[in-house]
Length: 113
Length: 112
Image (cartoon, rainbow over all chains, first blue to last red):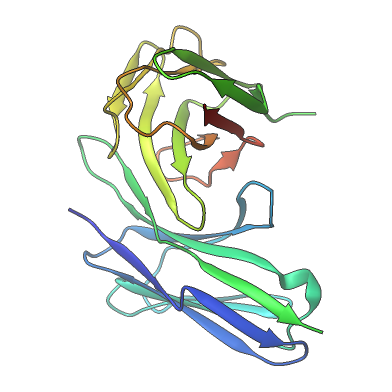
């Protein structure tokens, strides 16, 4: 079945530094979505990427969808304490029998002030 | 304000008891979903429904049941057949087949 893997599982970042988290799917995706879950909270949608090679930016966050539509990355520049949380990617496969959105295991981000 | 409401927020249950978690949305979304999250883990799909009176099993449906009698409501029953029910349960909805998910605040179930 479809699998979505995220690395690293944990990311300890010094405030002000940059980091990248990666998402890899075992199958080609229709789109990929990214969510952020703050500690004790629920996942909140960040962005959706649809096209091969697509790059989108949200302030300090840069999202990229691979050419083969099987991988994605999230790059955060100048990390702030507000970036603390777990970032999940979710890969969508659209099928006649019904869509299947599979979440990765998440990257838990801890920021050292 | 539009959104998804889950209740209860916290629930304790004795082994062998069934429990039903409520999920209501006023976003006029067609699709609704139930996910399970274990500590430090990702989200695993239990059941989903794309239209009223229809639903499909997700990856971990055993020991759970759902109904979709109204567009706004998608309750989840955790039955006594679920071997490891202690978890954080998240309900979500989406407008279309490929749209973003809107999550409720979750229900934390603890089996004593």
